[in-house]
Image (cartoon, rainbow, N blue to C red; front, side):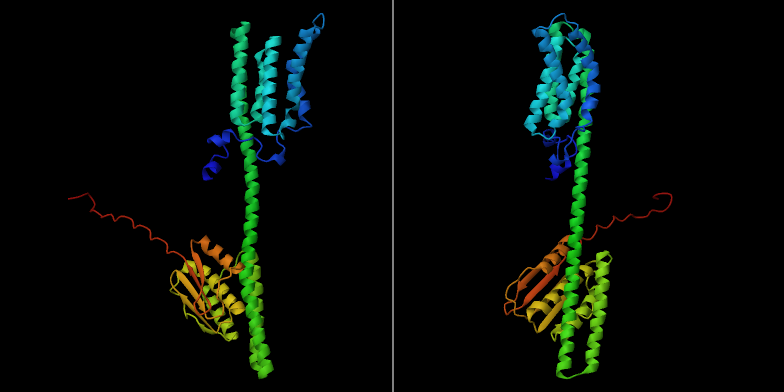
Length: 401
């Protein structure tokens, strides 16, 4: 796959030589169908005017005149109509190009016209068919034209025109390949833009899921706690404190949503530990959390912050746990609960965490504990240390003694 992509914009690979000029069938391709016939007539006049005068000067209309006129005007008509063949299947385009070159050779053989008129057919071939077929057919046309000149005894007089046809055809061959490359680059840019939009949507969806899932769950837990306090003991000061924390969480969530949409939000592992402690305490879950995160590598703290946030959110939502343990290492994090879960159900949250860890070369493993509950372990391989530069022993000025 990588090899074919590398050769996609040139003729360095065998596949590129046989690739159809139209990468996108909906793009149409080729000259403008409305303007081309007008321009084509202008290009054909230097060929049609002298031939038409020659036919008109014949004293009578015989089979030779009819045959010559048919070949000449059929060849010219093909040149005017070739843009309409661009959307046809490859076999139809190849048949059209071969037929046009045969007509051109027929005109040279019947009218003894200059071989320069073969340029119309060879030019059409390089723009209409894959590069390999263009080379095969055009080379065969030029060789046949040379044989016709030899048979007529005009090779020494007209071989210069044949060389001109070959040179101009070669220039058009490279021009056609350049046009195809530009077209493919345009299609590639469209594909890149589409992928960028898709990736941005996935990022925003993943961040909002991680953010709002945790924030709304914590707000729900604290609101429930405030309600229970009012219903059970009527402790107004504690209820007011819980409502203040709910208000603070709401403001923080709103700020995080704005930052996430703007792609300026950074997750702090210490803040996530503190938030997890408050959320678990409000849910009356015994939390065994680390008091510091200094042992975690700084470059991994943001990713582990997301892991901790999602794992605690899942505990609050689904687990029914009474105890949660969080352990941290320099390149790993574990969240373990004693809930009722007996199997792992991969939801959007776990898939989002897997994507985050994969982006930094890490892994996420979630397993069910024998007595119930889940164990979530995130691990990122430690970067390999850079090789130390070889020591250079300094010598006294003036060289070795």
